[in-house]
Length: 537
Image (cartoon, rainbow, N blue to C red):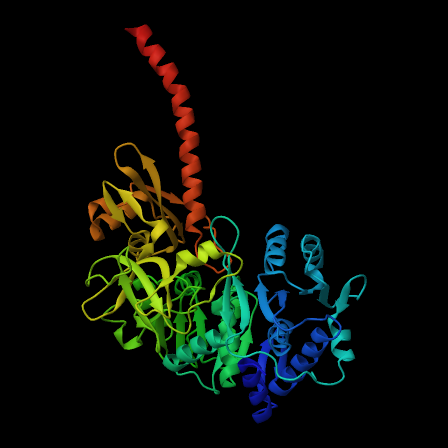
């Protein structure tokens, strides 16, 4: 029995009637969850024929069945891979084919997309469907559980160093990459995070994050590890419907991403009663602007706010002790317990405090590599200071202060260059977020023959009176001149990735495409202007 199935079995043995999951109005106790997992595992090994080490892709909403699929796959000795339900056919087809999945677990409303994608996956043998009719090559989930009238009889399969999950990154260009994590990787990451968050069995966690997003996935894994309760919602699209759950379920822990924080701090009718039981608010995916940290502290006065940095390839890298927030609001902290992180030059050597370089991470939470992608693996995992290890080169630019606290600067590919100076979009965006009424902000570069790149701010604002001149004046008062945007554009919304981050690379691509179109128009009109000037001469 692998480590995480052991955690579930222990929770079921000790507290069989305690609520494990609350989802879509359903409450499932640990004893019931464990029984379903055992039956699903037996069905996977029997009817679906899942062998040890084979992959099961789970393509569905945040729901009880998704949790059963994750733990059932592990119990059967398989490798699970959760895919966001908004994923389109072509991307799902790529994941199914690239992972060599043997089983696809989905729900009836997603079946048309699932079957269309499955047509291009030669290794796929069975499709298990929640609320399906069991026709064709599909297996109905309820019937699969009924047929497995006894727990999985197979002996314990797999050990800690075996692969447990594949998490496909939502890369901005090209096909996604499958991050390989072992049982030991998961246990190390969850144990380290649980340690500094002071996680325990009395916690109630409200998560609106997709299980396909590793930040959301670990809410489930960590709750089962400690025997806590997870309240699982599908999204944060309607905050006024979700936030009352904080009080109703007596939530103690509330994980956020920056776009959620932006919505919360802008709410005019936030009820203080919602926050009374919350003792822990966490953030990762991207750094929170300092102004949002202050606003969250006012909204959740009883909570410790954890500003963190992570990436799929190592789950979590750094955390900032809440007592340091006032002193270092722009920092994402220090390496998580049991790991190391430093800022390095191009050769991987540590750089002095204040110098910008690439963040490098070592520890038991670092991935095994990218599935079927040795070239990308070699770029990310490189020899460390000891002959037996490979360390993770994150591709993110950081600096460290004199006391060892880390500050995110930018993704290496996000850095803009204006007037010969490097500009971190994050630094400018933090200043933009401090403007009253600004809900979302992104900075892009527009090619400029003099400046190299002219900076353009893209904003979503609740203040109809806010104009470009006020934005530029605010930036000029808080930033060096070369960092001040020359252009400001207001939009109704900014695009986001599947993990809730503002899709800066898409916005930059749009800016580049717009510039090319304008250049072509200008070139054509320039011929006319030159001819007119010649005629006038």
